[in-house]
Image (cartoon, rainbow, N blue to C red; front, top):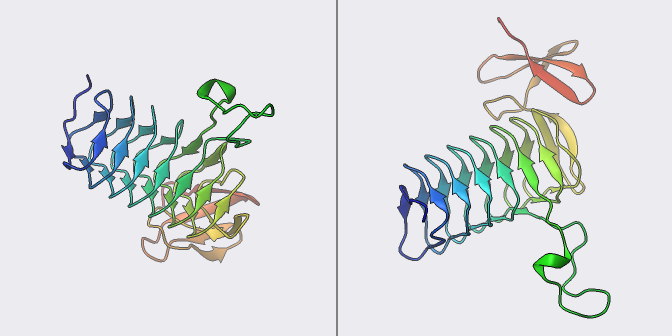
Length: 203
């Protein structure tokens, strides 16, 4: 039996084999399935679902009624907005072609991989398999069907890049050819390809 070092509300349904690290909180009516691993200082909001074996890094927030289906992986500092859905099936069906009910043996789950610091806005849907890059921002209601680059700001259905964001989460402003600046921190970023941005070191 795994240890639940964090706080688990009385109404939450947390499997004994799940791990809830110190400082984390699982709130009203949330469900954390078998062998899920919730890192330190995370918040799992009301009615959220975390699937079997899902990995959640430290300092993540999974807001109310978000659905994080296995085998999703969230790196540290990831934000999942209210009612977000991370899917796990290429070709969803309730039954097989012969009419028999589908079972766990009739399909292979695929996951959403979200890298450090990325944020998924409210009611967005990420269609697995897909990777969300570091510090990227997926706008509310977006439908993500392809990988999102680091620092990208994507919106719409299907989601498309409309700009860049820095680690502070604010849209970057173009300062000069290939250079972008955060209006909050002053940090600089360089566009090294049409869909690739990197932080400028030694500013």
